[in-house]
Image (cartoon, rainbow over all chains, first blue to last red; front, side, top):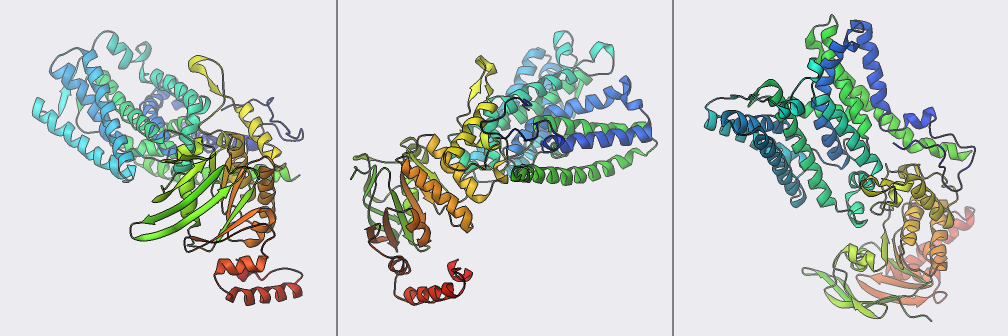
Length: 350
Length: 273
């Protein structure tokens, strides 16, 4: 993320290429994601014209990207740290239903509903995190368990309390404006602002603050990281709390926006977030990736997901494009990572 | 002779019914390389793990600067200045040299909540530390650790330990996975660490490497110190025999000598490995 060209280390040869050379840009984790985004833009511009870049078209994929991106970044951070969280798929309806039951069904203050929703998000994250660090069970299995457990809780409790699988919620005033409204009376959701602000915060936290380094070290070699004095257990729990709270947040905002919550839905976030993260250049086994890459990956996914509406293709083909895109992105990212590992060695040989 | 930094007194270790180490007595002094030799399964790894706080001895004591200490966790041993570098360096392949050098103790600039990782300073310090140890080929702190050769990764890990104030450096088979030239690099770094007054414990089963840097040798056989001698007191053949635990090795050594004499001094690969 730092792109200072002036600060060469001591002893660096002047002949060395600048930090902003094409090669060094390609070696960044987000290079593949950026090229993938360009490819998708060209593809849809060629087949659907530039409609999806006009305000109405843009808001359709920006809304998708914003809802997905808020979840994809913490999921990606967990992946960089060597963990997975698929329970986000249950946390979205859980967040939506919690706020709808408290503030809609029982008619209590919306702020109470928001506070309880966030508290539930933190709780599930803590449970996930503790189970992962206390047992040797892989986080995929732990969160698979919590995915189903939370789904069961949402369905069981909602039907028990409301005798229905859909709960209405009406929100007015500042809570509506802050969490679930359209910007400037248009089609762009306020979620887009949340997404951009959170992305900026994550970029700072991961790539500029010293603690970001710890996450990469954890994914690279957990034992060495612990020996180097990094509180790996605490960091793991914090990351799980972030992902499940973010998912609950997205669900809550959707309920406030659409004035209702359903027990189903949300499962699509599991695969969609993983696709965004992997297309964004994060190494599935951890230790490598970037927030900007995940950001690009999310946009790429959202454009494919929505762009199909602006072409003559049948909507049913979009999954095919996403599948091919994912494979291409992974191959490209592997190539760039190999370049990152070897390129400088060759340059030094001269 | 200077006083030992670290001394092991009558260390015994058993895992359940299996005795792994018997009555180990060893000392390391500043500016001295102790070579711990032994065949696979002789108990070298267990001994290192006791020194680095991974395992606790069943009986016996560890003395640091003459005072009895215990290392209940790796962290405690590290804070006491005992640093262990493993065969692959314990570094992070996909992190830059600067970032991996400073994992856990990142230098920052800025103020308050906006303190940011000082990449330029981290890179400069890391590159300087490695260059001071004699690896001048590393000039760019942004290079990924995974792009370095095995010897350079070892050197980086050793430079890191030295930079962060290690007094006792435990090197666990640092040359085992390396080619001849790379191994020479690492041996040079070991000599540099020694020159700086560190106590080095060098674990290996390559007698040649041990003889190149060692001041003091201990041969472990089935968990006991079978021989403890200083530089020049034994020949390479005698040490190899001790490690193999019998005279059978002597005839093999003679064969290798004969082979090397007829092959420009190259040992037969299969035997050397």
